[in-house]
Length: 224
Image (cartoon, one colour):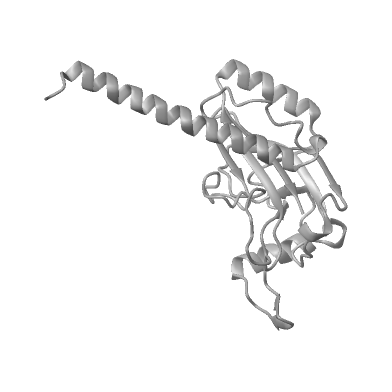
């Protein structure tokens, strides 16, 4: 028997609403698990809940590796949130007042944290020249010219647009709330990296990137 049109529309709306609810709950659960991976003081600048629906999450801390990681990587988490104008302006003022340093996405002297594996050791054998020319250039830049506090390179395609060296569009400002050298992860989660200056071989960076144009905030934590 053919369903009346209004019944079909009602059922379709109910189905879509149910799918959205399941997706939202899955996002919330992943967000909470990712936050719990880090010490609270490293992620206390992230929102407590995800009441805003205009949210996207990027995290690599819940990945279970079946093979040992090769090359350098860091544990990181991003949360991108679109806010209405009034709330965005309030958050912006709070972040600016709390920041240790701020940089434009177009700054050419940024010290960027990114995955890197130019020299790889597998079963006692060393393999060199494994990275791209562009990443080799960035690694040299990090160890010779860069003079900012460390910042993540937004490599995740969900966040990055590749219009600047840090991966964000030109309208973003990056506010570092805190960054310190040292070991903030268990030794088994730490890897040496030839793409960073000696002072920053290990450490963390926490902060937020803001776009007035998009009324968007990208919260980040990166630990390596």
